[in-house]
Image (cartoon, rainbow, N blue to C red; front, side, top):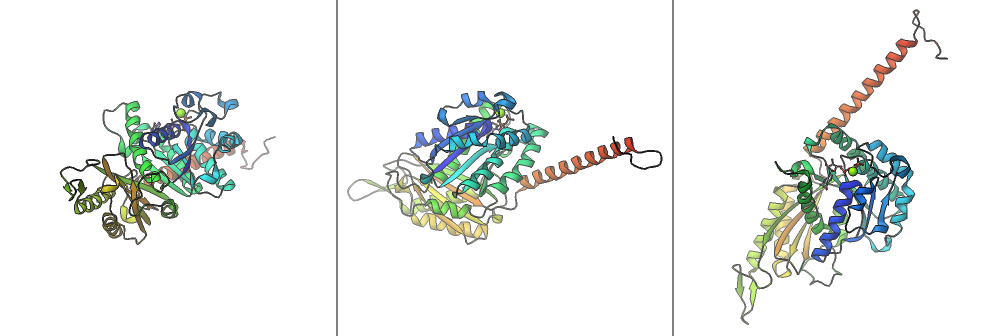
Length: 390
Ligand SMILES: Nc1nc2c(ncn2[C@@H]2O[C@H](COP(=O)(O)OP(=O)(O)OP(=O)(O)O)[C@@H](O)[C@H]2O)c(=O)[nH]1
Ligand SMILES: [Mg+2]
């Protein structure tokens, strides 16, 4: 699937940068073009792969290139004011050649969490291609302002995009890890999962064609539920290309992969992917639609494994809308199963954020009421009548 990726804010830019690096490393072609938008100059300078002409510094007159300091209302205002500058970079995207837009942003800060929903709304007005989001939720230990930003921005972002793919930093942090090296590891986990998912559906890359290759329209149909999506992943090392313990010899002396083993491997990887740690933990039977992708050397992929995996996933999710297929990758020694669960509704972390958003709104209302009351008290006469202020 060919994407125009737009990284908004620091996390967004770094993750898009990593996607390009991943594509180059694996020969993938998911990132057709890449744009990075930020209010902080230093964050843009730190990018290695997003081309300089596609790096957009917004809000210069307001924050002088120093970022918005986790003020997501300011982030949203600046995005609205400077949307033409973002459009200038989007003009470089060969729209006829992309299947969708993907806006990537951390939901806890100011620039990405405020700006990403504004950009999504704008792109949807101008273009007919689907606009997806990849939203990164902050860790619970990051503090109140980050949770609050995420709580507010998440709801707006879900509303504006055609589907919001979510990665929850909180489910992926590890004790004792420094923030910097932690993000490097986490970003690697992000691009591996979404890289296989979006890399699928590209048969034009001159690789061997698999038995039932995933088409980008199947990814789009799966994401058509709208709402929130999550991704699972599991992989196993194999000997490539000439087999090992799990292979047998063909009559001409060359080795061949045992197809029963290959089938079982795929179905077990699908189970592990769906039942293991998801990018956003949730009840998998609350998914409306799902898609499974089996990726790896073509010898190790087979239709039967995918079919059995699909049946299993139908049972688990209680949904008939389970799509599936191969993503053959010549140059790898891993077979991987990736499961996309779309339109999930039972997500504890999202419910928690919604509660925070409601509570905060109640607090704001209460404070406003109180200050109105104080103002009223100040200008009320002894007779209880309101006097005009001037
Ligand atoms: N997975 C991941 N998350 C990150 C990374 N950097 C930051 N985050 C998360 O993203 C959230 C937002 O941080 P930034 O992206 O730095 O914020 P910003 O959009 O640049 O906004 P301001 O810095 O406030 O202008 C944080 O709360 C972190 O949870 C990263 O490299 N990877
Ligand atoms: Mg920043």
